[in-house]
Length: 82
Image (cartoon, rainbow, N blue to C red):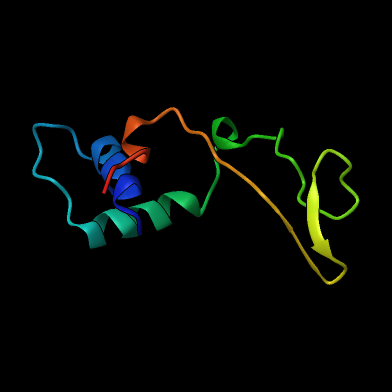
């Protein structure tokens, strides 16, 4: 699990006054939380990554195509610097 995700989940699940969670415990907590999606956690505006989606620019030859993607988040901890 990436350090940014661990820091984000750790900061959300453990208040600053509490002892920090171990990476293993934070991972287990995240798995448990992901088992059931709350309505507020569901986003229906995702772009389908399928061959017939004309809004995507595919490169390569048939059977060996690829498409470049990026993900933006609002959490500064997601953009960690090594």
